[in-house]
Image (cartoon, rainbow, N blue to C red; front, top):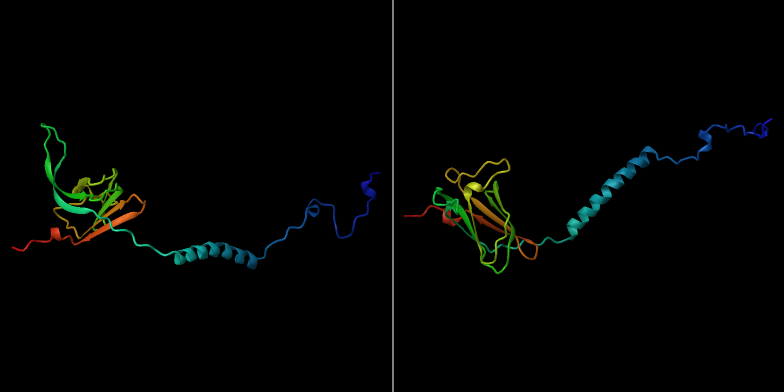
Length: 176
């Protein structure tokens, strides 16, 4: 005879593997729903509190001098290469600071990013035909007008400075 056979077994328990595992508490549907809502709403509430509590500072104005003028393209053409005159945006940095990450926008639709910084008292020119939409459609100076030019640049403090030129006066028709 085996020693196991002699042990008394309580009437409510069987000797299966399932009964040897401890009981795991289970969440009801109501508690599970409440926990999921809490997990979702707590980060949203924290983000809303931070957004409402932190004051927004206005972005600094970029002191750039903007003009539109013709530009020979390509700029450094050799004697055997022909050039053409194209309308261009001319930016002048009148400050003693280096500007990085310069981006320009025409009418909020056509964009150009300048990968190189503009040095203090430096200039940058770009033909208007180089401005593109996100779908790669080029700005056509002959067929489209400029209602707004926006210039963005990162100043040495790390902040982004902006200049909005709305209805540029140099583009308005001159009275005779």
